[in-house]
Structure formats: structure tokens, C-alpha cells
Length: 269
Image (spheres, rainbow, N blue to C red):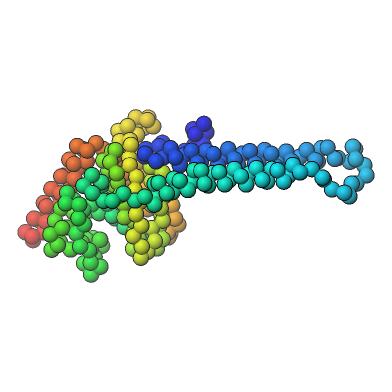
């Protein structure tokens, strides 16, 4: 039945819980549409002029509308207390404690791009300073003199993740309100200037599996901005690549080697 909702492919551990709530909400809305539509249509037919040529000024005495409103109110309470709030408590508020087994990432939104910062193998982000920001070479203002930044990796509009591992994202914005939207992972979180907002999830599908599932050999997971953030809002897109632990490690080593080579070239000149 979920296919009827047109939802994207589920690629995270918590996706089924969100999909379940969406399905229940749609069922409730469809039921409300049918029942309340019938409530309006039936009286039009039953009390039409041909059957009741004289108006009845006493009004309808039935308690059906009251019971209908009570039933839908109860259904909404069940959805809230039985599904939504437990999910919020268990998945959103219960933020895992960062450790070596988690993948920690900082994502900074900016018109009109996503800056992605990996702390490297030590799991410690290098110091950043606004005075060091260079839009071409150092958009995050990372202090290269800080020992913790020596193994840090940065990318733009490309997020690389290992499958079946906890991912902890610290989401920020440099200018206006943006919204990080990872549809296949059922992640959508506003990025608000002046705030560092944590987001966590576990990817359960690699990019190769995603392409096989969709039947598109070139398709990638998508990063989108779900908040209108300016004239070029449409341009604020990126891709997510999910690989095995080995592929993730190989990618990180490749990025680190490229960083070292670029540093050698910069020192030479």
C-alpha cells in the first residue's frame, strides 16, 4: 500500500516508522473525506424538496456528527500518543553519544551550496575561525595550524557515508534558513543561523543497491534544500554516496591523499 503514496525508496533504519505514520494519516484523511462527504450528500438526497416539500425548522436530532467528530479526535490522539511521540522520543531526542563507531559530520548550509566537513580518523574536528574563511580555498575557515585538522576532509555538495553505521550530523547555516532534505533516508531538518542542530540516522542501502532497486544505473541519493532560501534555491542540490566500510575507507584515504598533494603544491609555490 505504501507504493500508492508515491514515497521514495526507503534507505534508512527508521524510514519504516515514518512511512507507517504517513500511511495511517492518509488512511485517516481518506476516511474523513468519505464519511464527511457522505454526511453532506445523504441529507441533500434524503431531504430534497420532492420528499420534504415543507421545510423542517427543528433541525437534525441525530448524534451521528458528534460521534464522528469524537471518533476522529480519538484517532488523532492515538496517532500522536501511540506513534508520533514514541518515535520522537526514541529517534530524535535520544541522540547517540559520539564514539569511534559513529560517523560524525558537520554540514554547513550556505546560499547555494552544502559544505560538508569530516573530522578524519581521530574523530575530532579541527578548529574553525571566521577570519580564515576563503570562499575559494577554505570556505569553512578551518585552521590548518591546528593538529586536529590535519586529517580533516571537506567536500561540497557531496556526502559519502558507510552503510549500516550510525551517522551523526551537526547541521548549521551561514546565512539564511535552509532545510536539509535527504528523501530516501527520511531526513528533513531546518538549518537555522546561530544554531548547531543534531541529526542522526543509519543508512541501510548502498548506492549500488539503490540503483539496482530503481533500475537506474546512474541514479544517486539526493541532497535537497526544502526551504526557499533565495533566487537560486533550485541550485542547492547535492548527492549522497553510500558504500561499504571498505569503500568508505578507500574514499577517505583518496580524499586525504588529494589534500596532502594539494598542500605540497601550495607549499611549493
